[in-house]
Length: 300
Image (cartoon, rainbow, N blue to C red; front, side, top):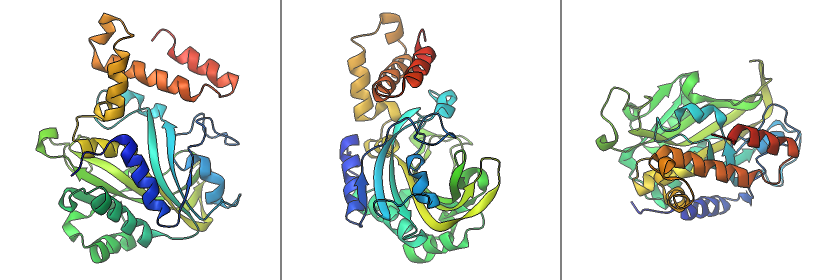
């Protein structure tokens, strides 16, 4: 498997889905517009909610993006796992009432195994507990043996983030090998870092009103999310998100500008770099957001 860089993987993904008839759109602002359910954009689909619900007409029914995201809910996991970050880029391909499960699963497999060159025998798909259609596609059309396809419940294989479109999902995990863990959590569905989720395709067909009430959307949609840095971890065979080429270069550069006591702790300078990236991307945000950012980062 070739050790592609972060910038190469971003370009490869967008070009792949452009070849499948998708419109490549630029990353949206980290500050949501007309969405009171979020303080900051936390996923690739978040800025596209009106297209999923049918409230607005998309520029094309097939869209692909690489969206900058912030997830404050993952802060407690920083430094504890290899796969969590608060600021990251999310690769996504989206269908607004166009293609659905069959095409989404086939293209996911094609990109990972043929374009990126990830060995098929190190990839393991999962599906929602009672999603027999997705299970059949993986088994009969992609050719994955039944014992390599995992069925998980709502906590693992039903995607939702606040109010808005949601639905069951199918994830693809990569086995990083025993050198990254042999403990009881280093299994499919475990909390260890051996099996890393790299792809999540959401079959977005419901709307959550924010209070746990679900209604059918007027159209069935596809919402794919794949962490760009996670994919780079797999390709570059490095220990964590902070060790991929772009983050490593940023952290090495920052060593020049921070004090010796802070420099001795890898996680502390990783957080330092993260704060600088966040400040840059919300520089043109509303004054209230800049004030919030300043109050949350000063002195820490």
